[in-house]
Image 1 (cartoon, each protein chain N blue to C red):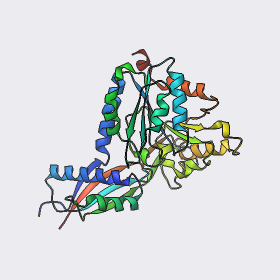
Image 2: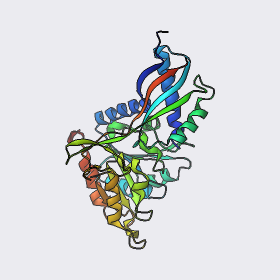
Image 3: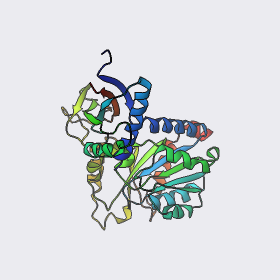
Image 4: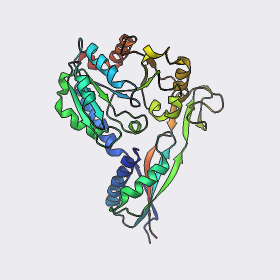
Length: 115
Length: 224
């Protein structure tokens, strides 16, 4: 369950960004989580609620955007979105990818403020 | 209200760990030290393989090891039998090593006086994958006895690895190990990942593993 470590890092990161930007009244924390990142979203939400207790972020919510895995196919000479995870192959021709373009993100993307 | 409702930030969640891992990697490079980490499920044979590897490599190189465990110093004691300097990292309830734990444990070693450092992660195929330790080579181990579909179940760790090792090859026949099936599964989730097969008990494959590690080390480090 490394989601608890990740949740603690989210809280530290958000507190630091909020201080730098001079933000208060954060309601939601937006994340981008790649489908290759190995993070379980439900475990992360559960961990976040616990980790946020007794911090300025208590009661805030996570808004998680899944980031698809995109590979560079050496045969098609194109970027393709992989749908058959965990299999890393071009969905069009089945070739092994030359490179993974994205899909392993673990990012804080935005802070949503209360109206 | 001029304040936007959503303030865009772009920050890696594990930024702190990543920053520290990068600085570790810089330190390793400056010291001419090559760092190899081992990760696998509990019981795959990380410690047995590492004990043999340390014993064999000590003849030619200055080697040391860090070993992570939730509790007990049993693995560190086993590794110390190799004669190489070994430092235990007790993680308590934490299921993986992170760059901070490695950084703190390094105070025991003079990095300039080492050629290779091995880091044995906590036995776990899920949690270690997200945490960069500053290592140069990440090795994922899977034994002949634990099921050929492991890569399909734990793709992320195979995706972040630079080498896969099949351990306990001496038991392959007894458990009807399907070698080609496992390798196909490794390559399904991580095309082109190099795969080696070893037995820490019989010594089969050890020479190839040593050569792989030694040749992965950059020439600049070898000269330094």
